[in-house]
Image (cartoon, rainbow, N blue to C red; front, side, top):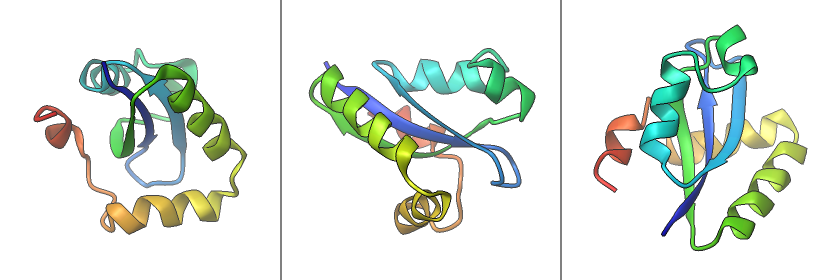
Length: 96
């Protein structure tokens, strides 16, 4: 089973959320309907803009913790490197 560290963003890309899940498609769907977390509901964080795949849950959690400690500009660079337009990657996830 794969585990994912992911970053969601609001429409204007000013607010982000970093999380971990074993079912990325389902989790992205929860965020899109406002059920992901209080933070994502409050700031309307609906776009999946970045994700990484990990073999174990501890690896995914470790990466989540690392990313949460990063400066915002580093997070922005990480996202822009693989997703320059900050497009919603949910459709890509459906093919995993």
